[in-house]
Image (cartoon, rainbow, N blue to C red; front, top):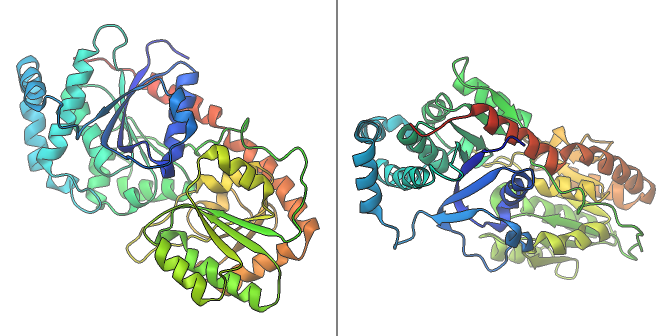
Length: 415
């Protein structure tokens, strides 16, 4: 990798179990020689973290840390670059179209966070200076990244994912994108949405799928087989994941006297509601909510599964998935997929090849797909083998190399 590439990564919170793709991306970049400094708006403070977090070399700065010297950062920046400081403050206050929607920061809050980032950039001018600013998510992190770019003169890019992309106003997306060197996203559906909003005056829109560690996620050397087939699902327990549809599909399977178990891994605000629905459907002995697990534990879960099911949808307020990483992790382990036709899922799963796809919000269709695989060990094996081959295109190292090339090409220095 080109020497001297050090990136300020701006994220909403760190470390988030549901955002392991960011952790893996940072590890891939560090392994190929890219320096990283993480600027998190808040600390996630979750009870379960990924064990590979200890391998991250990057420094982590929390913007909501009460001990950080806000007045000092503003004074240093205003003294060193008064024109940039004042022009960026005016820009933040006047460009109201950059705020609103899913972006929760006020103009002054975003400016304050950007000043802290810019102050750290100036402090790093010697040694291994920061050469690029990259934000994960198009809402608050991208706004902070944009303002830090204006304060420092460094090139800026951001990755847009799902809710952050579809729930910010179009003028906000255009305003952020048109000052970026690149906008990165995780599925072709998102590429088309961004191109439609930003138009010809925007930067390159780069499709880079979230990578998975193919050295870790792989088919089991030997499968023992389950006496009763096991359906596994992994995801946050939120509306867009469609777990109520999956539960209703399981109820249809049970009513048809099919024997199976369903294990759902993850946590979220809908857990109590979903557990109550499970019990109301008479599935207490069939469906188990297993809570959150780190990737190291999920590997064995995937490898033991007979079918991986995830049935997301677009919610009424526009929230949706892009291409869920857990699908690719399961595919890499040789597990056939049952999912729904939404967002970027069909870019990885072709119905009748890596698995089967049902319409969204269609428990009967989902149940039919599950039944087809539960009834046919031969199809499960064939689809699983194809899924493992397809997953080879989602290697995390290849994704890291593409990102590193984008960051290195942008160049930049503090002015």
